[in-house]
Length: 368
Image (tube, rainbow, N blue to C red; front, side, top):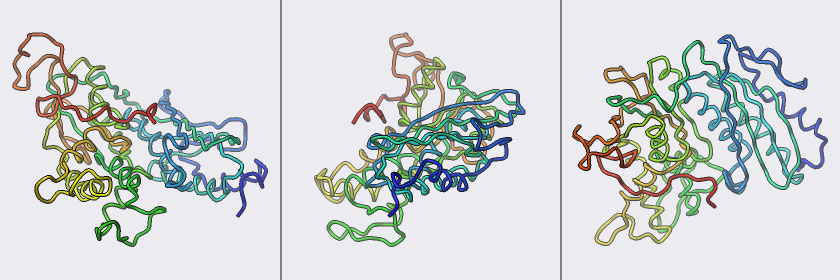
């Protein structure tokens, strides 16, 4: 098996570069000191993100392809959350010398597949050796003449809407940590503890963690439809919704009954995780584990689904892929539309069905 230390940088790049997409906005791709992208709007949107081994992914679970898909997804979602169309990515990759070259070429394929639906190109970057795997990506986007959709534009009366899946990535991570799904992923169901059969949907949940598939087109559609605010849900619904609420000076109230389809998809995994990790009987009979509570934590606090959360003026016909999940209220306004009992504007930035719920802090990459 050929490893990175067995080849020169040029030899590795010769294997990577042909796998990368050029992109429709690329005027000059890899090969020179810098790439050149078209910016017909006269502006460009830019964001950067980093993935560190054992912090954002684990090599024992993730193939190079998985990490490439994940890296593309989380960066492209940031551009989509501004209402822009992704145009190009620049990637820096740090790899230990004993890394298999197939991992690196798999990463390139995953990055390419992650970009495929957007027309964005992987136009250059850097390759270096180091003590652990690190991926850093800078991504650009085109607003196509529209104003950027900011976090600070939500107004009282706006409808809160969501695109994508909720809680799937958190459930997939829990399944992996409990040892309930084997990786690399396979199509065949596997038998696990106590005769519980691995269902196809479990692998879908694990895939949502390893290879997020954000609703990138929904960001552009939201911008075209006049969304007043938007962001990528990377750190948990409550945590990220709170960022919109605080930036906009409003309170966001989420529908307690929202995400019914996601809840149904998560219940089987929650039962299995509860049984495998000693949380209790998996949902049948007295003294059972709090399956609904576990599903709720995945829904409200689980991160890295990379769905989109946006607000729209009341009466707006929501674009394809978007579902209403709440409403924007004035800060200090009670759920019934009246004034808060103490008459102040203090209180939670986000509520669920009018109540403040403690479901954990959400995703935090500074936590182990």
